[in-house]
Image (cartoon, rainbow, N blue to C red; front, side, top):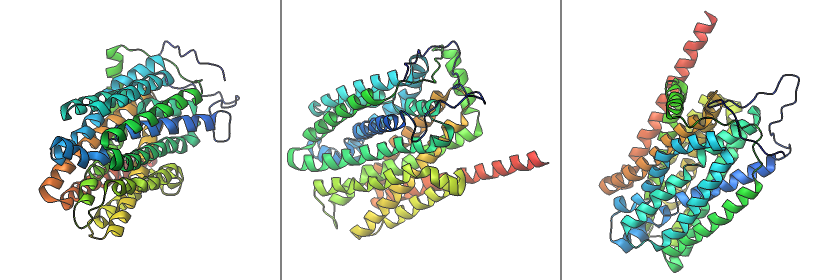
Length: 424
């Protein structure tokens, strides 16, 4: 595969569309490089989520060491996701200029280096600061990855390809929490996050060796005026704005639930040990399946139908999680996880298909909204738990799901109005 020159004079250029009489040289399932690309981005997703949420399952232990409440310890999660949300747009601009693969590689290199320093944090403020830097470094991954896929993969395979990347996120989130749970039970939370750092190093090296060089990238400009113009254009697109809000609301549910669940399961009537609590995150495997099959769900129900299904599944899981029975709580987590990852895969792939220019910025705005939702969910979910117990956290989640459904209804009405105008 020839290396890309990654050079162009156009800003936010769209990937070249093959001429009608020429074969489409972009990757497709079964074609050259597709498996390598899929596995490389899968590993990038593993590293991103394993690092980003490496402290989430350990919050009760962190609270105990530093003598702080859940709402304070939750900042070790919120700082990382907040740093990512703030820096994802600037990092996407760098990827437009210097290339998707270059920015993803640099982001992972910085993030894993910080990950090896996190276990030595002497205080909670220092830990929060390191996590914020780590989140900012990871900002180069999500938007660049979806933009890379939009440029290098054929449109019919895009939802499936992005679903596989999201599936890597779910595996990273699951493995990070499971590993840290059992390691922390024996050796403490510091050793646990160190192990995750080492795992991320291995994923980063394999990612760089496996990811094919881009063939359809055209570089843009770093001029702020051009960047702001692209951002304004995306924010003036009603469909993109609805998708951004949907991503943020889905992640508000997910961030709140998984930040607080460890505290709930350590309390009566469950009183589970740290290792078992970490194993609860094996339900992330459901997210791996639901994200990777999101393309088929859209094929059957359409984009809005798939979002309704994802929202309904998530809401059902939230209600079931209120039960005092551990099997019902686990079933609730399964439904929450499956619904969330399906909704996220559908919304994020729709952003890539909707944006006709400045795809990295379009994806960056989605990722920014998504991780703002994560930070809000972690913080508000912990505060709601402190004020009203698990029912308070579930209430926050149900409000967010109601927002998803309401926005999707608005999108359905807008689409019908456009159809009536087109046929008038």
